[in-house]
Image (cartoon, rainbow, N blue to C red; front, side, top):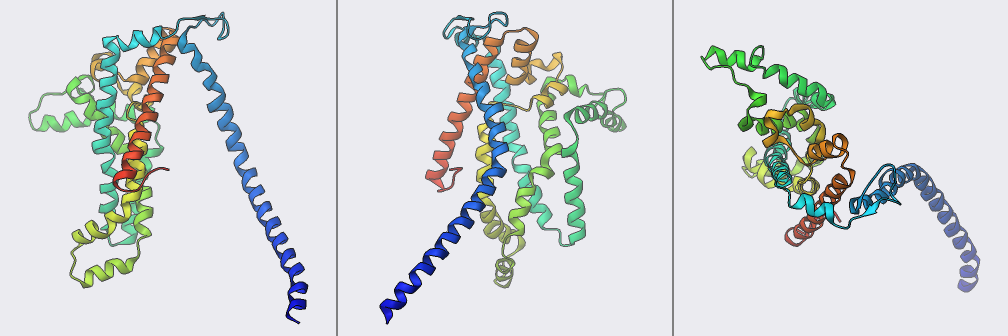
Length: 318
């Protein structure tokens, strides 16, 4: 009797399995269809142009084209690696990114923690909304705003300093102040937007953990240290690794729009140097070699930091 029942039910089970496989296949097909346009654009605009990397090993001429330009090997790599100007550009790039990493990366974390201490929900929402707004302003608008605020003649900052008997300061042409202005403007523009992920992590923390800690007599500071920050750590580490990978690149729009010839010695970074050499001086092979080297360094830094992170904390990008 049992054998007969097993034989009779096996076709039913087989039919159910086939139906599940069909449903799963349809679901996967729909997901692949949604991903296909992104994959196609990624291939067209990111992988096919990689063919142009070979001009870094040529004396490229737009009249001869990539296939017929003269090969020169590592000539351009040797040129910029032995050029003192290039090393000044690398130094500026790393220093600005280091300041951004030190202050700009920690600012959203601190901002999210401070917003978490606001008990009134409507006040918290207003603060968060206001902090998002600068992100949607273009760097053209932001740079113009900072030029107006810091103007030695009509700027609000110099006007306020004048009340205390301080002479007007030429902020945008002062080399010792310009890097700080770059970092501050980046924080002002992006701190709220960058904190969104931290807000999401904090909102997902079980409230019973805070209640238990409060019953045990833990202060708000101890709750932050022992509950909030440990839950934020994976996200902090992930964003830190991504930020570290861009150590050799700086936001071109920001620097290009805010710098001027008087502060080139502290503000000229790889992206602006490549723009001037490539677009203005038409040295396409040289700038391609610089870009290739920059990409290799960023990739090496990302892989190395990811391995180090996995060894120390067990967390990484992959």
